[in-house]
Image (cartoon, rainbow, N blue to C red):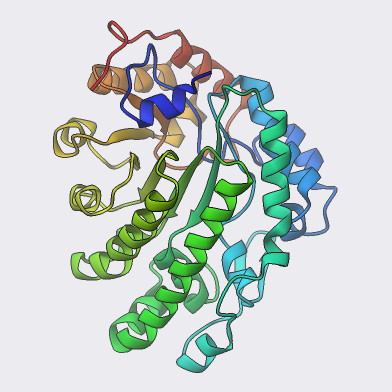
Length: 348
């Protein structure tokens, strides 16, 4: 039995674009909020297979989406390397700052398999519970984004501390990137072994770097990770999301052998369809349009079809579902996307 998402990512003919949404499970769903109360902390929630499995399945059950994405967090990798991670209500993630070579040396050389075992257990449970035609997406944060959080000690608008560290001590920073690259590779491979059908690499803060640093800290590590995954699992499609990369998206897809490229809201689809041939485009509805809902969301979705409708693509948002989104608006959008038929089952 074929999977619509996998076919689209392979540029095979599809009758309609598959739809899944970044952060499709989470705070906008009342059933998720009820579930979340069963864990004392967010990380405990992520590391409890029954809860992570249920959170992953909730939006698939509710909307009939064309893929499930594992409920987890990109910061499980720093946590499994021995960097203390916690979440504060209203303040987001906090990490024990890693700001010199000595701090890097104190990290584990590989991820703690016992720490991440519940993540892989959840994947096995989800894969067993999903319909065979519904793929499960595993994911990881990219090395630059993970390093930015680790050096900064949490989130920041521009991550200046991390950027200055990388500029002043590039050799030391490269050690952190190399360590994280190996950890990301191992985590994605373990997810595939546990049952993930597709994986996505999230580089959420790629767009804050100038071109030279983008190439060094985003593009080259991604090329190494994806190339090695492809060598081991050639049948598993890989999506990358270098959010905010702008025109650097084009050079990224030339250097990194991904099957799909997820586009943020700021990317012109007219430009993208010409600049990035041979790779499946994913995106890029404005999450605010989904909050607006109704005809606003459907009109915005229609424009995406008008631009990309003659080639296989994956319908998604340009970033994650916002917490204030009405669940009914998500259902309306999914129904609309599923009602659209592409001309004569388009192929590449």
